[in-house]
Length: 63
Image 1 (cartoon, helix red, strand yellow):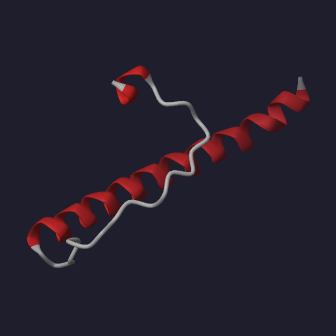
Image 2 (cartoon, helix red, strand yellow; image 1 turned 60 degrees about the vertical axis):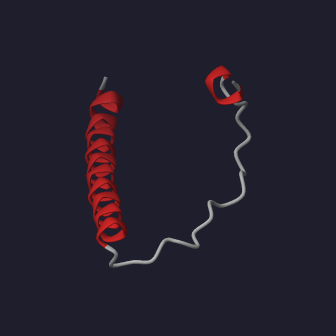
């Protein structure tokens, strides 16, 4: 039981760090979109990176 009690604070800290990271990424995404829409950055020649995913495409993606 004490081992679990010792692990729980670590898990809580990891969850907090993950949530902070998600919020930061959402802010950066919003700022990037705003900059692209207002013309502060040029995205006309942007190309997506080559697909490196090993997951199978969903039915909606193949249709």
